[in-house]
Amino acid sequence: SSSAGPAGKREPAGLVLDLPSHRALRPDAAEDGDGNRKPSPQGGGGGGRRRPPETFADLVRRRLRSLRSGQPLCGPAALEANGRHPSDFPPEWHVGPESRVVVTGALSQLGMELILQLHEICGVGSVVAIDDMYPNTRRSRIDAVEGRLKYLQRRVPGFSSFVVPTFGIHPHPGLGEEVRHERMGRSFDVVERFRPTHVVHLGGAEEEGRDEHVDYGDIEGASPFVAGGDSAMMRRFTRSLGMEQVLQSLARDNGRRDDGGAGQPRMVYVSSDEVDDLSGVPFAPSPDGSGGRRPPASVLGASSLAAELLASYYHRRHSVFSVGLRLPAVLGPFGRPGSLLHDLAERTVRHAAGRNVDGVPPYHRDRDRYVLDGMWRRRRGAEKGEMEQIVYVGDVANAVLAAMQYGPPGGASDAASGPPLLRIGSKFTASMRDLAESMERILPAHDQSDLPSSSDSGSSSSAATSSLHVHGISPRDAARNRDLLGWAHYTQLGEGTKSTLAWHVLNAYPYGLPGGVPSRDAFQGLLDESSETLSFMNLPCASGCRWSGMCTDSPWDDVARVTREMTRSCKFVIYTVDLRPSLD
Image (tube, rainbow, N blue to C red):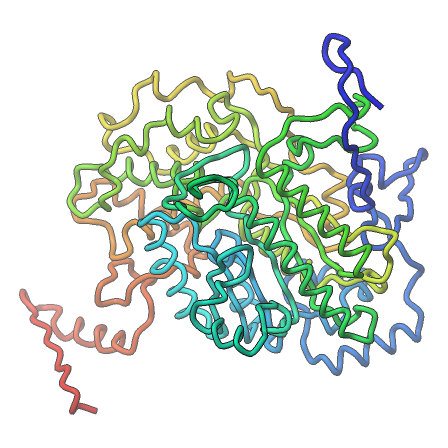
């Protein structure tokens, strides 16, 4: 039926969604009228527990599976949740050295953090990375290959394979290794090809929210939707396509099994909190009582809702179990160049170092790149100072680790309830203007003459009015996250901001600050405070790195220390290296 719109106008009838997974996210899902926790259906369930306590026979079976698995749970969140509900974390899905993990969107901010945690925390022995390496600009491609891909190859011994897809997650059938597979009649199938124990689908997660647009470079001829082949919608299409390709592969794998999907590789995917208010589709019942009035739509909100729909469909029709995580804005290292959060941090480092200093990166000399008037317009609501929920990338990666190991009994076979869907977030909210001001307080600008004028900076966010009523994560969602996954955010917003800036400092100056930088103490103080969070940073070895205690280890470190002591009293020292191939 139609609904009443503004000024009494009737809007045409449209789609109203009522998915089981969405019911668990409603404000009234976790409590009854007396304030008691209600039981909820399996899989998509709400905040309460869904089954009777574990029997002695269940306990024996779980212990036997644990002995056969030989892998402990990985990550503090999963360990905490397992202590309360051990049957929700079966040993066969524990993440450890024997795991084989496929990560799509591997070179994205979250993908990098997750792969590093899989190696550093879980000791995963095999990681297959899939990433389309967008944006297709020269600087972004260099950053993807030199700053990310090669870093993972050096840092993560289990980084076994890297795939660049053409559409979705599938590589071009006529290039490289795929030619041989196609001749054998083996088209790309991610589960059949790599036999993973876990699949984490982050493809498209690099698409920033709030309608943020950046230059994605040369995509001429890449789109079949428009004449000439130049369409930004191609990126959104490939995100949904990649999601379905993963789900199709898991469904085919289930069809080959005789265990009812119990041995299916565990799948985790990410969605966006924009589904709540910017999906373009009303949910039933409408939270504001508007009778199904159509909300506004953003690209990320609509494409994230499409991912949730696909997950629900494949769960109901093909018993494919998945866990979806709705994310707010993510702050931290490895941000995408060109995104507002990334460039605000880069701008702060640039102004603190001074643009007229020899040795600064070439892009620091580009004043137009860092004019705030243009930067605010990239992101919906940034110019007006609208508040957004912010969560640190390391915390999100820990939630993904817990979700990878979460597998309640019967979760795949219970088709009546949707797959689990959780809101991951923090209690912290800020506007983009707030974050920019916070960054500048941590690293004050040195060259004041290069700062934007007052008209460029705009009004303070505290005086700005917001059209969105954004709050931190609700107590009900926080309790549900802790109940199901044992997860809660633990990084304070100030700490996350400092870690982000410290990463940008090392990214801009991997060999050390240029000699002419006047504010060295501010930079060094920031790095000293953030040293624990910089263990994943990629720096040169001591021969070219001046960041004491943070350089990459090399066989020559001991030699350098000895020769430094031997020549401490010398005014000049000449180092020579013999590189003849005849030397042992």
